[in-house]
Image (tube, rainbow, N blue to C red; front, side, top):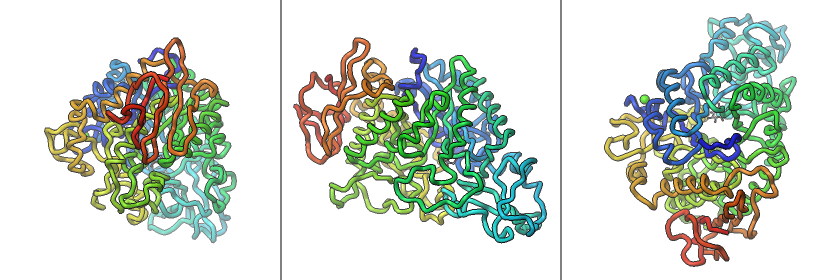
Length: 576
Ligand code: GLC
Ligand code: CA
């Protein structure tokens, strides 16, 4: 464990997607005992902490982001005792452990929602549109009277997973009641009303439940949600680049009071527990507001994750984030992959036959219906770029997240039969949006079983590509030139070299060495008696001169920095 008190300012956190990581009981779905088995692998990788996507009791209609019981473990993942053993073993291996918390909505199987539905009233056309119950079981959710005598939803809000964000509640005979509930995501995920004090108190209890068990921090799902604009106004037509709070259900000012409450709970502990927010908010000055000293510690920089393969756009994102976060004295949090978006290998892979000048990767997230997943891509280049992007990310000041399998260079999987797909984003759009299953395919660990040692048999909740045999962790372990070993080397250097530490002061965090359309080139200045380190990344299609330096430290792939030249699609760390 790093000794620094503010470990989170520079931690590299490894995201485990529980159903995809490793399966100990052989049912085809990853579980907690699978994680326990691989704690030594994670310690050897050199990450500082783990973050687990939800492990709670759930009908799994959104892979566990639909929680029915926030204080227990879903039986498909194991038991609370297994989870406690995982906490202990992770700590003993020198890492911290964080879990996910989902406050914007519950599952429709949560006892609160079940109770609300059991409490239906008769359809009464004299009740005006948008009328609400201020107390009782209905008041915990956004349950509103519909428009046009209840026959239409209360407003025009749409669900992230397709269709309207409102569903009408039916009576015992299946007839509409004229009352509607809000679900910004799947209709199995009713939104909670965070003006309700019972909701607030219940969640403070959830935090304590896990903090008391030794969980070091929480990743907050949809941390820019929760608060809704007063009066439920229609969403105006939004243009590209509009600040996120223009949407009446994102980034509303009311959400900050909730994070202040949560910060108080985290600060009750010694050592204090920490938060990382899933904050899809722009521009950077607005997302930094979540990182004020009495709110969240960290928040993902999604602008970095969605930036295309383009030096100028990436540099602008880095500058904006460092500048705005420094105002709050907060570290930056870099991320390239997670369970909601395409893997970098595929995202950055150029489409074969397309003009090489065309930027790859721009906004190619799973939920967009417009992304081109049918044209074949050059995955070899994609893999080089994913390695380069990893090395650059790990040189940036602040904290970084690695999504399970990213260290193996896994690609997005498109070849999944429709009937095996689980993501509601696929089903709610009749397959128009592919959804996110392609980045959730079970990990390859070895070559002795048909599931590449995900378990000891051939059962898999999603099929793996045959080529993953060569990408399995133990194959890469034995290959000194693999992406796995490159990542390990980078993480080891991060621990040894003070220059690579977490700095929140904009002036000393990073210095740009050159400005170019195709090259990122920055220095992390010397600190604490150590040496300065420079990172150079070539995003162009020709080799570039590295320029004056004092020796190569690490390359994104062996041989990319021959002589003074850096190959295309490569990064290198050198002594400045
Ligand atoms: C977040 C999660 C995503 C989930 C959604 C609803 O965006 O990352 O996986 O579907 O919230 O909880
Ligand atoms: Ca299992």
